[in-house]
Structures are given as C-alpha cells and as structure tokens.
Amino acid sequence: MGRGAHKLSEVPFDDLYVPVEEGVPFLIRNLDPGSPEGPVRPLPDPFLADANGLRSFLLSDWDRRGRPDEFNLSHNGGVYRAALIRTGEAGPDPGIGWTWCLRRLSTVAMDIDQMGIPKSVTDQVRALGRERGLMLVSGAFGSGKTTTASSCLRAWVRDSREVGVTLEDPPEVPLGQASAEGAIYQVEIAEHDFPAGVRAARRWGPRYVLMGDVQSPEAAKELLRISLSGPMVVSTIHASDPVRAIINLVSFASDVMSEELARDMVAEAIQAVLHQDRRGGRLMTRLASVSGREDFARRNLIRRGRFELLNEAFGLTVRKA
Image 1 (cartoon, rainbow, N blue to C red):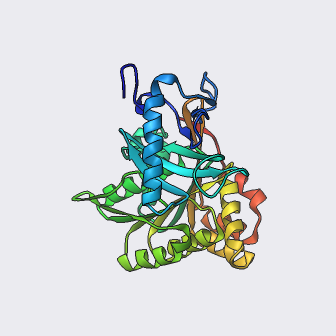
Image 2: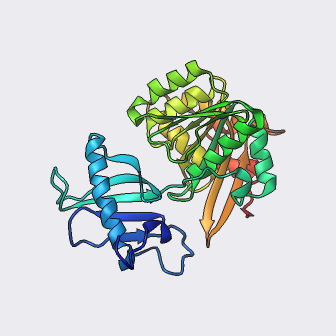
Image 3: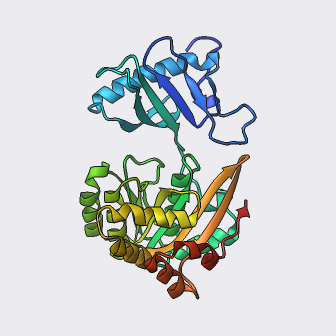
C-alpha cells in the first residue's frame, strides 16, 4: 500500500461489501442501530488500496477452495466470513452482478465475563455447564450470537476441564485449545453433512458441543438428536425473543418429523434460551430458564404447544449490561 493508505483493520465496520465489477463502490455497514454515521456508507478512500488487495486475494482463495458460496478467510490482519451475493444479472463467472458480503469475525475468543452480560446471568450460564441438554442463544442477524455461544462453550470447558467440540459451517471464532484447562476441537462441516458430523461427534464423546446456526430442518433435527444423547449443547438461532426461538426450533424440526414429536424433543432437551440485542452499543440480554422449580410446567407448555403462555411462565425481564 502506498503513502496515505490504511489497513481495513483500522476502520470500524461489521460488514464489507466487495463488488467484483470494477467501478462499483465498496460499502461498509455498521450493525449497531445507534451508530451516528448510519448503517451503510462508502468505504473511505484511504482504505481502497487494501480493499482492492482483499478483493484479489478473495477471488484467488475462492477459486482455490473449489468456488464455494461461503467460506472464511484472513487478509492483512483481518478475519472474515465471505458470502457470495448474485443478483439477477449475474453470469456464471465473476463479474457484473457479483458482490461478496464479508462479515468481520473476532480474532480472539472472548471470556464470558468480558461480554458485558450481567453477572447474575453469567452465573446461571456457567451453572448450565453442569447440566445436559440444550441452550439456545437467540437474537437478530448480526447481534453477536456466535460470539456469545462460543464464550459459553469456552467457560464450560475451562470450568470443568473437559472436552468440547464445535460443528460449524464454517468455524467463526478461534476456540481450538488443548491444555490443562480442557480441550476444544473445531470441526468444519457443510450443512448437508450435519448428520455425519453429529454421528462423529457422538463417537468422540465430548462433554460439550457447539453447533452452528440453526437454519434448516435437517440442522434442527440433528441439534435435537445430539442434545438428547448426553452432552450439554449450545447453538444459535435467529429470533426476536426467547419464546420465538423455541417456536422457530419446533417449526424447523416439524418439517422432518411430526409437530408432536418436535415439541416433545424440544421440551425434553431445552434447558435455557439466552436472547440478546445490541442497542446503542450496549448488550441487552434476557435469560429464559426452563429448568428449576417450574421445570415440569414449562416443559409441559412446550409439549402442548401453548407457546403464548411461556412468557409469563419464564417471568422474562430485560437486563441492561
């Protein structure tokens, strides 16, 4: 890069839109609704040299990997998850109508106590590490669900000095470790290979499992299967609140099994839902715990599909970090 040029790592953004077609501007997006600059704006000129270098590296790495629609890459101090956008005018080869959306990923796994989550909530999350079943981390797109889920897995493994496995497409947060504080093994699996990945994970016998975002009926089915097979599992799901997270999981699973069976499996597996939003740069959390004194009543509401009664049963409140 020449004089006056800067690295992309120096400019704050969540997403970088990288056009393949020359002459189309690079755009950056900030997912924090409280950002004074607004969500989307052109990339400032001093960063264009690094952005052009990133585009060249991206296309080369994409071709080397067999031209996937989504993958992770590292460039000049930044780590990104790249997802391809093709508009209606796009051809089969890179050019007009091709844009890559690059989500900036964390280069360091965060400790759960550094997440800005109230201690009363993190204490309950840590306690779940002594349980078996499923914890969902829910929220909107870009709310940091994977970062939170990863910090939960890391805390459970370190607290117990046990073994954890991640099954992701692809892995987003660097968690791999093998030390006196426990071991975490990160496995990249394509979504259509979730059944094989889950079977392999069960053979490995991990105490904890992190499964990637639930975005399909097959992923929901495999998530429930492994959650009921012995380990404590954490996964993420898009939802507007904790109850909607449970409804969405049941809905996904109902596409590959009866709704009654889906409700039964969710009711048996679920231990808690940690929902989060980012507002004005602050993390706001709501924890819905299924286990506890009202364990049977809450699970029974899920089995019966009486989701409209769950908010009251959970006694949900919004907690500000």
